[in-house]
Amino acid sequence: MANSPTQFSLLSRVLHWLMAAMLLAMLFIGVSMVASLGNYHRLAAIHRPLGILILVLAAVRLANRMLTTLPPFPPTMSCQERFIASASERLFYTLMFALPLVGWGMLSAGHYPIVMFGPVHLPAILPANPALYAVLRKTHTILAYLLFLTFLGHLSAVLFHTLVIRDRLLNRMAVWPTRSKKKTSQIQKTIL
Amino acid sequence: MNSSEPNQLPETSPTALQGAGFILRLMVIGVVVAGIAGSFLYVGGWFTPHALAPATVVDTFEQVNGQYPGFRRNHAKGICVSGYFESNGRGVAFSKAVVFLPGRVPIVGRFAFSGGRPYVADASSTVRSLAILFKLSNGEEWRTAMINIPVFTVNNAQGFCDQLLASAPDPATGKPDPAKMSAFLAKHPETAKALQWIHSQPATSGFADSTYNSLNAFRFINAQGVVVPVRWSTVPTRPLEPISNSSPKLADTNYLFDALIADIHAKALQWHLIITVGQPGDPTDDATLPWPPNRQQVDAGTLTIDHVESEDTSPVRDINFDPLVLPNGIAASDDPLLSARSAAYSVSFTRRESEHKSPSAVSPAEAAR
Image (cartoon, rainbow over all chains, first blue to last red; front, side, top):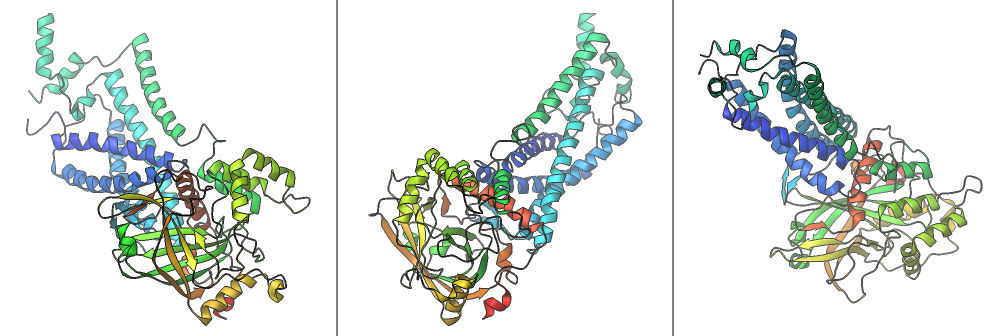
């Protein structure tokens, strides 16, 4: 059991789903706020502190990732699939850090105060600089679309394994009760 | 048990689905992924390209005024100033914002003409603006962009764009088409009413003798948590100077900016920050409606402007005077124009900061005279 866990650690699984919800919410808030006249302000007021919370959780998650043992890939995953899965994981981690940092840096370079809530605000992490602001603003959008595409790819792959190959790939990340092997064989015995 | 687990997988989980089941499950995946991608694009406005969006407002400015890369899309012609705000402490009763504690906070600001043409000739009939950034002692900021008319001419972003298009110069005559303007006014009675009110007020001649108004309502929250609707104005200490019909300087395209520069060099200019406290029922969501004249007015302190600079050398050129950059103790009202302004200013800011900057109409040498 200790050598080869069947699931990610509880903290890993909780962080995964919590951050999945936060990142997806962030992507939707981001894409809708730049298109909205009526709700721009309200959405931006959520976008900033939520982004910083994601940055903090990304640091916790990276530390946790480096300290825990991962469950092995199921045998239903080919070499190429394993490579893509590992590469996309690295991309997710990079973007979880890069997007909030670019956002924070962009507001700093744009001479904006970094308002969190009430009187709480963060210091600038870059000097005010128009050209730098322009580049970071564009980068923020490109990285956000890249994150969304990476998410869609990840979702498609997991759904394909879970629904079509039916190898229970999703169980490795489940925070809900799953049928263990033991229970499954008991059920099979009962049926037989 | 662990080592044998992978071998059990094919037994409990069939690896290959056949025929209809396979197709059905692939379709389910397709629907889920396409649904999420579609929702994402939908909220991003991809399926409603003709809906009014922040970029549309800025596009309308560019369409009406032409392209002036590096300049603000509105209030394009301006000069930058700095000084300080001396609070007398009277604002504390209404707002817990630290800017109202007795004492001095530095300010930077910008005087400008409304409109998107950075080299337009000065005219006393053009709407003038004053934008101020208060640098609070705790690191917070308060940004406000005010203009010298008592109420705004429209009450939402659609009206704003319609007005821009209706008042656009006709390429044939170089002047706005009166038929377009009357059609716009017929469709927007609130604008006709606001214009009547604006024209009933005494006209000021320059930047230094003008009162600048927040127009939009905001909310003040004090230390006890009491919320009141407010509007604010900066009222000049110098008396109103009527527009002179025989001004000898009219030939100078920057004559009003030059007068302001000369005034500031001669003696620091001052404005009182007047907070008008609304009553329940006063319109906070419609910037075209004045509040009753008997509302309480609180003089919260004095703005002193003692330094003037060309945009070419001032960092204030690269500040977005977003009216919703507010300190704790000041908050947005339900006026839909506030969020719309914030969104459109952001688009304008991003565009101009991405572009090469051309010299401003008022040069550094002119601002130093």
